[in-house]
Length: 297
Length: 225
Image (cartoon, rainbow over all chains, first blue to last red; front, side, top):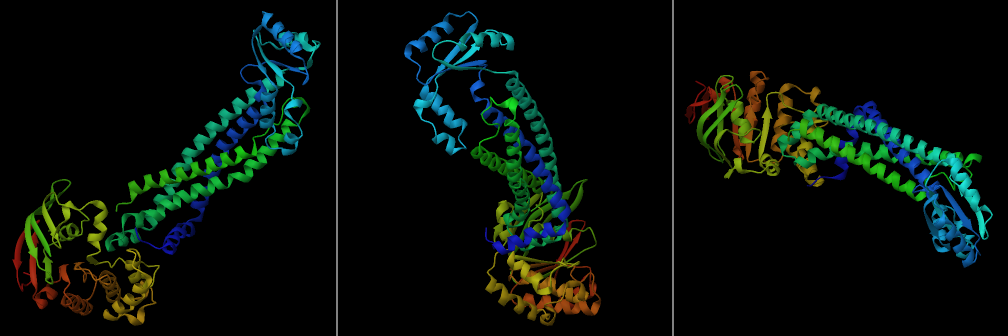
């Protein structure tokens, strides 16, 4: 495969100059579809990160004092074991609490560095038989005044609402994203098809003088991939705005129990990389499909 | 250089383009392919550069059975075969020299080779002064010269000309034929399909006549009919 990069770019810029509206329209559709998919993932991750302590049906948490004695700890354990209203519970010791804390505040070095393992309160994560909120509330109250207990928090309705809301939002984003991705696929396919048609004379001459199949195909292929890549790349700033908006929601009074309603920055980059790669794959698949149908080499 | 053995080609609807054609063309020969429209001349040419494949028979080009050529090697076959057409097939948005250079660029020839070969071939076809003109600024005869320059700039072993004078007046046609004759004298095998009785009768080259896909006549130093 012998060709010069300069030639390749000349071929490539041809279709962008020839029909910019088609090129831009395709780009925008890819952008919006990837934005929808990525936003769904961000909402899901933000909620997961904020409600990490409440997964696996945990309804209330009993935090012990960091300096609670072994006797105090085993007294609470015995109370939990003997209560018929408790389905199951898990004990999170200081070390595990520290790891969880570090993960919850992974984007804030200042907060993470301000605590040591010794400062962490051990806790019991409790799943009652009956998840009704007033039953949970009564149960939780029963531990509040026990010796060694620092605080008891229940999964208030807000958290459940947020989890439900997040599931629904995810589903909507997912389906909108998939529908838009399909139309992006068709648009790339049509763009490439139009480009092939506009350049049929050149393609014909290239074939006649013996240009290799890849020399002929590559510019079309790259055009499709480039549209996908650009569409994906543009999502990052919007993802950031979106994530900050979520964080501002989490800062409201009703959600004070939530650590931080936002996707971790590190994950944001990964979501962006994944969306950009997905865009490139879509561009490649669509152009390969168009080439196999409309370009006879 | 070219050898056909019992070659047949039938299109959809039982349209017979070629039927059991066997013939051999030596290196450096100049051959006219004559016959009425639909007699199989164009199919004959298209089979030689593997734009189509025969239904039966074997075709050898430069000693190779091109039926056994895998897809990725077809471009290399085509680099040895120049093609010119009645409608020139020039690129309107490129100048004369860019049109010729295009043929070298797309097969990856280095820039210094292109910059020496393009002016040389334009000199050969007598278009040095029009190098920077666009095709639409040229006469039909000049456009055909550009197309010949493009087909020949890579020094192919074979030149296929499908009615190259079909759109040109008789005087211009003579100029084109002189050019093809010169190219033939350099050792390039020329196969030219034509309806032009005057040209065939004047040049007195080998004539292969096709009729409804059958090889009707193969005559050295022949005439049109």
